[in-house]
Length: 171
Image (cartoon, rainbow, N blue to C red; front, side, top):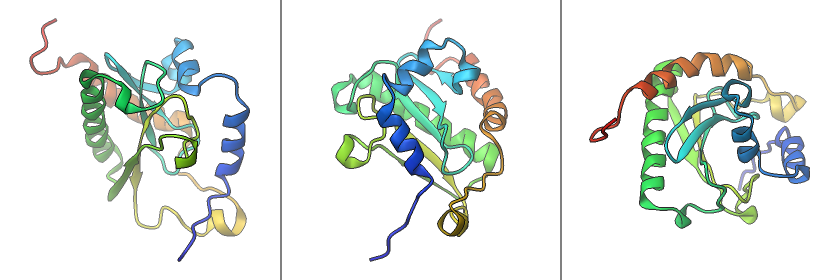
């Protein structure tokens, strides 16, 4: 069996466990989407950049409500999460042209959740060779853009979706 090391994540995980409160709830309370790196707000869920991305464009979709597991939400909330996931894939394909994606949830501490009390879906664009020797050999991550650069690159595309009304919705 091969093991893949991700030593750069240790600092983040330690920081998350020391933090008081929830990173998602704290981002929402800022009321400054640019500073919080929130790309989109739906009716029940929002899309935010991961501050410690594996690759550029690493997003997370989370509900506004602080809840630990998706099985505790209404169909309306989980359906919107699925719609935002599909929208995120389309936008990331357009902007970054990845050759694949990782997507998933870690529900509970034993499943690897860094934020245990507020479920969220990771959406990670991937390319061949995006995980190279640098983190393993020199404990250094090489990212092609900073977080604000990613935000500025993606936000206009998400903003366009705010103006479109979902099918069947009356405004």
